Amino acid sequence: MTLGGNHDRLMSDINVTPFVDVMLVLLVIFMVTAPMMIQGVNVTLPEATAEPLPSEQEQLILTIDRDHRIFINDFEVTLDGLPEKLLTILQGRPEREVYLKADKEISYGLVVQVMSAVKDAGVEKLGMVTNPSTSEEKNSGSKVKS
Image 1 (cartoon, rainbow, N blue to C red):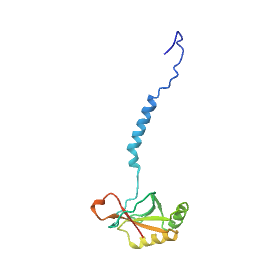
Image 2: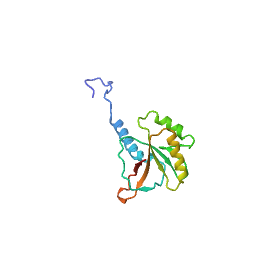
Image 3: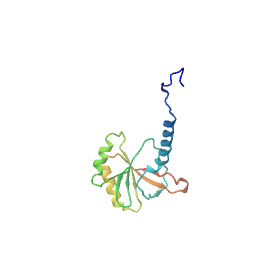
Image 4: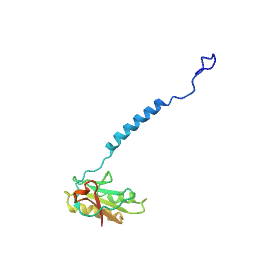
């Protein structure tokens, strides 16, 4: 790419092929590992015949697992600290709405205690999350509002 007799001249074009190769490899790596990073709390939900409710935005989900641990989405909290945490979270939200997922093996008394703590936090709507009882809707859980 030299013109004339000047052999000391440098090439000023940037070779982007290695950059594109690296970016494609990173893209493939992130596409493969992203589904593995999704975590949640394993809960065996009770079954109900209610229809699923449509949802436009991400919901605040309160979960009680088999070991009586309480989670707000994926973050563990104590029963005593639950109203305080919910108040902090719900300050910026226009709708004060929470969905409760409880393992079917835990006692009803704990569920009532958690529901009381949720109401103490000023939550206006408390929904219960269940699994559909029909075999057609295996993939999605249905939400029933109270």
